[in-house]
View 1 (cartoon, rainbow, N blue to C red):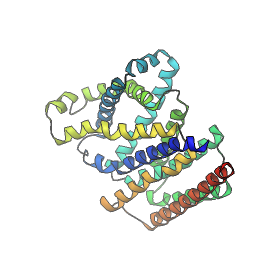
View 2 (cartoon, helix red, strand yellow):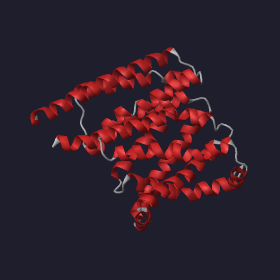
View 3 (cartoon, rainbow, N blue to C red):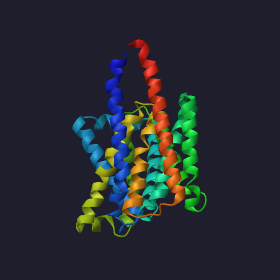
View 4 (tube, rainbow, N blue to C red):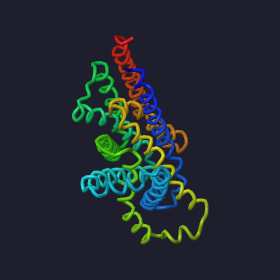
Length: 301
């Protein structure tokens, strides 16, 4: 029944593209908060995201049902794990952005789809055609070309890629809807964030009682992060990790261009070669995936 599935598929793809576009341009937002420690930014992100998500749950009439999920210790463990994975990923991502390492974080998010494909193969039985395997190898070669540019083992890239791929696996296995799951994640992490802000400099109360542009931007971290996460969680539950991985290249491509063109991070010859190989690989993979989709749908027409 392909015609019944196509609207859902189109919505999932649109959600994924929206999430990756927003993540791609977020370095510009974080740069405007560079007067704050990265830990303070992430703590604010957690608390303001919590407020936004639970307002949405209340409006939908799902807040009580979401809280009842906390009766199950497995739910608590599952979403505490996903919350910690996400918090760790964002801490490193914001730190890299504020320390002129946007291109290295972009490298991590280029690697991330390949970890998604690997986990899709190992955990969910997803298979790749020969042309897809060739494109994966070409993209990995492109990523490897950047190793010299980061002067050693690219720990930022590897950590970002691995943590977010494991987060995607956890979200895919979660029995809860995207909004409910994300609401529980932020709820479970909020005590840590609140304690941190109460004892950090400037403290949470000082920040709120002295409102300025940066204060409002800290509040806006909730919107800036909750929106793409909701879109991503919706998409991750409704499409294969392989397809999700291909679409995800949009985010690091935007990060790469922002780091290079706006913040003038070095664009070496290694990165020129890497960028070219990765985009050739994306084109090959997309072409192969499209042919597979046509081959599957044609017998039913």
